Amino acid sequence: MNKLIAQSNALLSSGNFEYAFCGGQAIDLFLEYETRVHGDVDVCAFWSERDEIIRFMQSQGFQVYEMLSGGRAHRITDLSKQLKEKRNIFCFKESCPLVKLYPKDENDCCYIEFFHTGQTELDFIEILFNDRTEKFFEYARDRDIKREYGKAVLYADGVPYLAPELCILYKSTYTDRDGYQQDFELAYKAMTEEQRGWLQTALKKLYPEGHKWIG
Image (cartoon, rainbow, N blue to C red; front, side, top):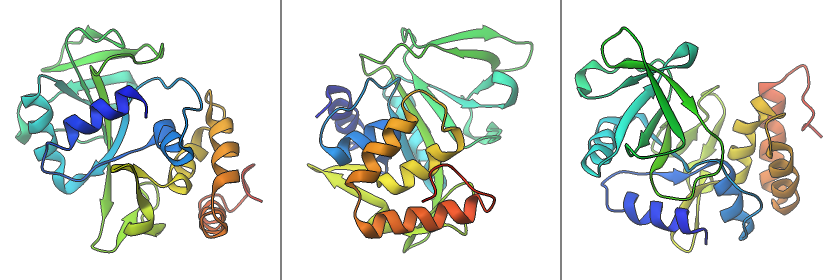
């Protein structure tokens, strides 16, 4: 297992909240081998536990920023003053080389630049928030697209990860990003017929005018 995933899982599992690795690392966990170099550690979690997660990450020495529009970010220091424009937060150590901040004339706001050179230390985690019900994981961009929770979150040696069909659905918005087409091709070949069927149905609902991964 990838060293960063093992270290991140050891950290997050000591918190009192649900989470699952997502993105390219989840594809690797599903395939049981490392397919490519990944820019950073991506984790999905749930809105209902957002404050608890932020407090936990801050207690572990991470700065926490929420992403805003226009390349801006807002540092969360007071939980009652979150802006919640977007569903992702970035948690990083002060020495992290993957992030550079540029001050802006607003309280606790700045411009943020990311360097996609590949993460080597546990100094950065991106957390993306989703909704769920007791039985279903809800896709963030269309909450009518749902996956039974027991099929949405899978495990590899005790490490939770988002099922590949959901990871690919999220990646379908940006198919030209480095590695996304490879992620689709490798994951799709290894999926069960049921997983492929769910993904195809979801893609057709999300893209009624067509998408290159349909069919």
